[in-house]
Length: 282
Image (cartoon, rainbow, N blue to C red; front, side, top):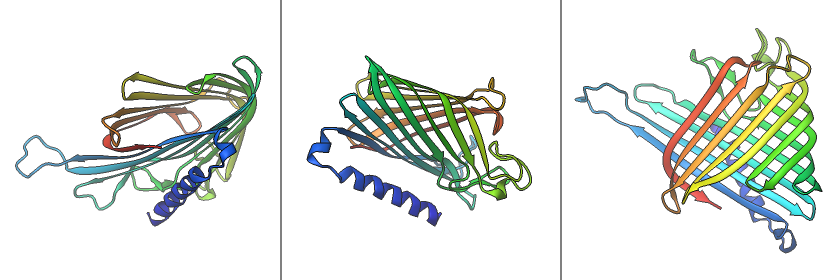
């Protein structure tokens, strides 16, 4: 836990410092905005409650930061995501992890014609804390697994809220610590290996809209097909983030993520987080 706190603090410090590094000329070229949320959930029962249930408390921290560049016919969009959550059930000695994401997306484009751009994209995904299965066995930790994608392509960008990027030649690298593959495969990495290389096609789409006053919905979809192994099995990663602002500092947030990756598990993985708490935009 101490390592997690330190890592999170370093990332927050880095982002805060970068946000303050503004030069008069570069201010016109860079557009920065972000959102920090701290959500709380609590359920409590007294001894006389007959309906059943267990008291619990949970908290989720989220950081969503965009720093985009535009200079003439060149655009460079970047998004950093950090999310972490814990829950504590009455009677249990240990806390349980409810959310853990570390992600960086970078998309560079040079205008070809109209709303079309030649592009190059980079994506990194990992986590910051140890992951346990139902038997309390360690199955993951920081930078294990770590996913990297890189590739050239074509970008269609209508505006900052709507874009689609297609990369027909995407390299993908998965890294895990060798102790997770000692007795079998892990996250698609074969037994005894520490990495897996894939080469295929990637499609990433971004769409953000305001449903009504103070209610925004951000959608991100990533599709990937590996030419080297069962290209018909497309990996899917869909993320939706809904922010319902009550006032300047309070909001209700809903985060939904659906993943399908048959190298990890032959089933759809779904994560949903809902909470009410402090929300600050910058």
